[in-house]
Image (cartoon, rainbow, N blue to C red):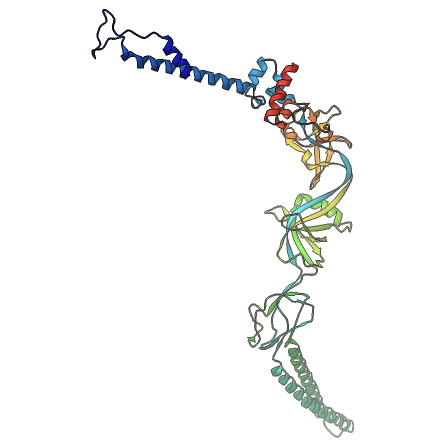
Length: 468
């Protein structure tokens, strides 16, 4: 730019200092004199800048047209169509290009009919241990969280008051028994005298009534003795059921009564344990058909994430009525729970195995899609094209879905990449691609552009143009 400016200034003749007839300017200098030189220089400089900007624009257009990053996509679709090269970089090439997908074969197998529901772990027995008599709590023989068996001693109430009452009742019984024995002897003598007509019959009858009175007193005394013996048994508090004890509610030394609010401790039965869950009334007939024949339906309990199996059990019973507010019925399943993985009031996911379908048509769950026509799958033809096939799905078991109608065993269906497909679309299966096929030398131009680096993609493009 500087050289051109210098050359233009050298080739231009210098203006004369003065010309005849020239009009002087307002500054007193001639109009064509040295004062007009800066204006001309500015004009030439602006013209040069405009030429440089135009050259940069042209260069940018050329680079954008010929550089590899301008090939794919819809930015140069019109240019590609006008030049007859739409198959290399236009939108039509992407639409007609074979799409990579994953496929799976339709198989035959056993499909379990499983009902899933949210359940709550409920113990079969949850007992609050209360004292049955009043007294001072002497000792506590359990530790919090301990597993106890039925009949184990848990605590001891001071038995001395009840022992004294027992001994007093025993003394009363001995006295009344002696009186009864005397009355019986007198009755025997009176009966002998009556037979000899020595005494009146009224005296004999009175003595007989006295004997029966003493007999009643003796029975009452014996009942009092049994009561005090039972109190001594109650003074030793034992576990009514087997299970796990909770936190201790009363400490030794406290005076306890049968009206104690929280009791001494709570025992919860853990082995076996039950899970209560609900199912829709629509499934009731199917369950009753199995249970009425005596079949034991299998139930599996899973954790909250529904991924880890905790315990397996069997269906025990159903409730006797349907909840009208929810349209569901309650069921109880029994679990042996040997490892105590099920904890009371724990929320679990239950899976009730109602039936098993033999030789069912099974596909991966991801193959079944939903659209305006309902459920359908993409079936792979022998020429590596796909067709839309409406299907009727049956029971679902996790990643497997049974098909009631629409598919046959041995057919192949698309399980991944179906979002880019339509009726009659071409597909490629990654496992069927030739080994060593790089991105720059692939069958499709888009794959080549994405697989090659900047320099290699640029040279590959020019090679393709040369081949045309």
